[in-house]
Image (cartoon, rainbow over all chains, first blue to last red; front, side, top):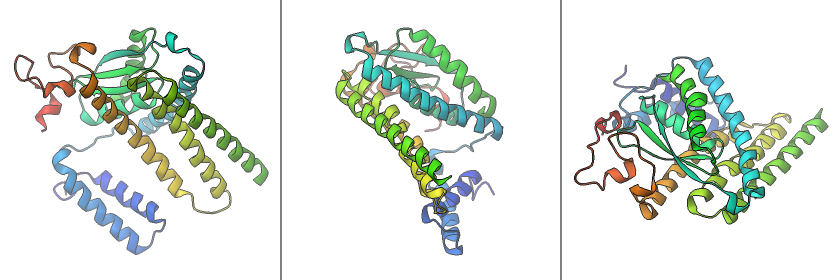
Length: 162
Length: 132
């Protein structure tokens, strides 16, 4: 089973996305969606040898809602910085966030979350995969940014993806 | 009911137009590439997201399909961080040196520079490298 379908969840997702793209649930589109769902995971397999494990879907959904809310808030925060903060008062900063997460998928989700949320962009990962480089748009106190990321996002991710 | 939905749709369109504008102002106003990167990754996400949400509501309540907007939103949320990361990495490559960045706090350096380090630097030993 796992030889043919390395990522069963991805297969289902690809089939569903294909049907949604076509906009129909006819046998034709379902069949082609399943074909894509079988072929694409097999092709990308060398880059992605492990299976993604989500231990708790309610927690994952809760995390998604939290991130969506934070995206909305971060838009307002960034808009205020862009519109009202004079350039001379802007304090951009680089911050290193040491990682407790070890799972590559979990780190990817964390990095994406950081980019989408208040005034921070993930710029790089350390070569051993144990620290993220974050650029902050306006961070008078860089240490608090790091602590926020670790307690608000990383701790939650650790609960359902490690 | 329909009037209420239309009011929400109109409000969403105004809000997303505002945030799209702020994203563009940010591109012009902020001082360098790394800070400019913040404006489009955030402000524009809500700008486009708001239009998509408005479209979903407008068509959904008229009984027409709205699945494509949902897909666009999901793809937007997935691709924005990836392109932001790539732009950031190319900025680091082109105009920054390891001295400009904070230490990793690890034996290994930042991944963008690690390939250039030929001797002396710590060998990558972590999980991400073992997979290659």
